[in-house]
Each structure stands twice: as structure tokens, then as C-alpha cells.
Amino acid sequence: MKIGIIGTGLIGANLARKWVAAGHSVRIANDFDPSALDNLARETRAQAVPVAHVVKDVEVIVTTIPLHAIPSLPGDLFDAVPDDVILVDTSNYFPARDRTIPAVEEGMVESQWVAQQIGRPVIKAFNNQLAYTQAHEGKPAGTPGRIAMSVYGDDAGAKMTVVGLINDLGFDGIDAGPLAESWRQQPGTPAYCTELTAPELREALGRAVKDRSPKLRDLSLKYLDAFGEGFLASLATGEYTLGYTSKDVVQMYRRLELEEIEK
Image 1 (cartoon, rainbow, N blue to C red):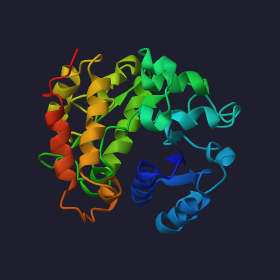
Image 2 (image 1 turned 60 degrees about the horizontal axis):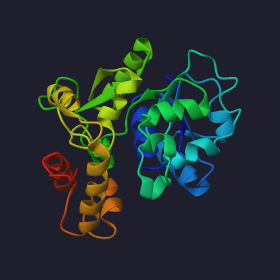
Image 3 (image 1 turned 30 degrees about the vertical axis):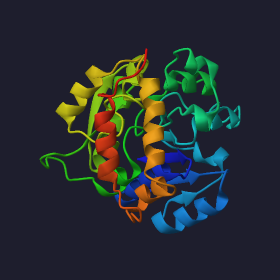
Image 4 (image 1 turned 180 degrees about the vertical axis):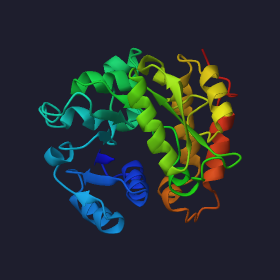
């Protein structure tokens, strides 16, 4: 497929690397950090282009930039993009990083807010898995214990396309429901970075409690801080220098829903 990726952070880099290896034609754009764009293009053989060009003549567009940066995309970026092109949102809302977004604070689902900002329907995927898992834990289809990723959206065909792209990454993709339910894989839910098989993931999505997840999200950041400065960066490379690994983070997230939260 022809895929355009906006953003070359951990998720964007992982997607570009693996999709090029799987035989897809990938363009990448990142006006926020041109040096990262050039380095990733050399490493992955993806084509580095300006943001205005990354959305042209593609079948799938993935926005993988911080949530607060979505409104800073060019206002006319998607105007000429055909309606059948699939837009995928990978963002997560962390108020400490993204600043306060009133609509999301009041309960709007994160990806519904993204769709509102860009004026296009979106599919939600790739947001609830550790970067290290994306890069290193993919397995061939049919492997026992294969980790799954959930997909939300209102276009069944588009979701099946994304499920296929997830399979190319080495994970089982599942259609989990409409975009309005995508809060079930947002930070602070049992499906966020708990790295589960498809049956386990479906069960975890069903256990999610919307009003509780923001409090658990904020609590998880305190736990991550306790791992030590620089630990999050090590998750991408697997070069753990502080005695903790990605498995420790997964276990932290799995225990998170057992925490008692003050009403």
C-alpha cells in the first residue's frame, strides 16, 4: 500500500521501519524535527517529504504527533485528499504534555476531538502499545501468545485495512467497535500498554471504566517517574541502564486498575 506518516517519533519510526520492510511504499514527514526525518529516511528507505506532500497519492495517512500539535497542521492539508483515503490517529492525551484541552477534559473522546480538528473521520489505532513492544515483540500470524492491537472507527472497511497493516507489524488486529468507544484503549484503561492476546484484549476493553481512566492515567505517570530519569527513552531501544525493563512497565499498567482511587 501507499502510506503517508506525519510524525517521526517512536510510533512513526516503528511504523515506517516495519511497513517498508513488509513491502509497503511509505512517505514520512516531520516539520518539527527535520534531522530526525532525514535519519529515519536513511535507515528505513522511506521517502522523506514535506508535510504538504505526504498526503498526496496515498491510500492511508497516519498522524502520529502529540495531541496538542494536531491543530497546528496546515488548515488545508486534507482538502484535496480523496474521501476513500484512510486517516489513522495514534495520539494520546496527557494534560501535562498536551496542555489542557477543555473538550477532552469534559469527556469528548480523544480521537473524536482529532476528527473535529482536521474535519475528517479517523480510525484510532497504534496508541496503546509500548514502543519497545512495537519494535521488538511482533510475531508471525498464528504464533501462540501473539500480542493484539485494537482498532476503533466508524468505517468497517477502513478498519479491516488497518487490521491488515497491524498484521504486517507482527500483531493480531481486532475491530473493537465505533470511534465513540475508542476511550476504552486510552491511557488509564486496562487495555493501555498491557500487551495482551486478542481474547485478553477484548476482555480488557470490556472492563474499562470511562470516568476512572483519567485518574489512573495521571497515577501511571507518577509511577513512571519513579523508574528514574531517562527510563522512558530506554524503552524504545531496550538498552536499560536503570535496572528496569519494558516488562516492568507492562506489569505496572496491568496492576494499575487494582489501585484504589479517591472519589
